[in-house]
Amino acid sequence: MPFSYKTILVVGATSGIGLALSERFIENGCHVIAVGRRQQNLDSFVQKHGRDKASSFQFDITDLAGMPEFVKSVTEAHPKLDCVFLNSGLQRSLNFAKPLEIDLERADLEWKTNYTSYLHLTTHFLPFLQSQSVPTSLIFTTSGLALIPILHCPNYCATKAAIHHLIMAMRAQLKGGNVKVIEILPPAVQTELHDQPDIENGRSVGIPIGEFTDAAWEGLVTGEENIPVGISKGPYEEGGFERKRLEAFRSRLG
Image 1 (cartoon, rainbow, N blue to C red):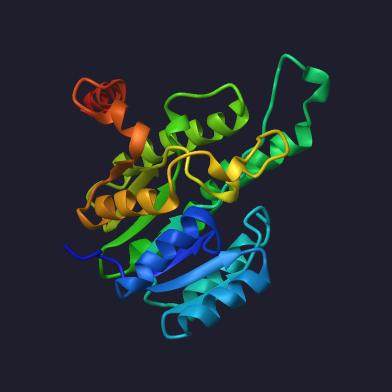
Image 2 (spheres, rainbow, N blue to C red):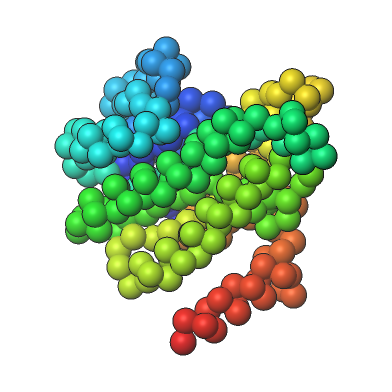
């Protein structure tokens, strides 16, 4: 079954999970609009794949005030945009046992990057996606840590849990329309997300990026709405607590 969407905006397209899936999109005939902060990386991405398959916009997603103009520029340049993939993220350690060492500005930036920017981007892109005459989608990368936190990065876990709940409600609100809401829940994956001073050999943490990409892609092409990968699958399996929670949520909708 082919992937349904043809013109995909990918936030965080030049590294890690975003890069791997962007290249998979291109391999399967999609045009990727790469979004990131570093112009050099964006230029390299477009040069590698060619302007017929890739284009780019330099934008910092924490610039909330500049977001309406950014979205306007994207949609005017790409009127056939049918998929927005929100993937970028920031993970930092935080230990309440050492409160004097907590950097609240860094914690606020983590929240703004991982949650608030997603809320704003979704709000600004939705009217355009809803106006399209074809099926469209919003794809979110969250995390298995949205379901079960770890001690190393509780603020990061909280941001992912918040997005996870937002997605559940958003999907129900948009039911029956032309915008499909998809959530990818990775386990730890070997990317630069873990390149942190307090994590030794951080790039070796998790499953190989290729293994993750194959599993996520399979979920996308088969039309899944929830795509847990690796250890994140357990809660969604028969009898798993997330499956039960989804059933409880749906039962409240009537």
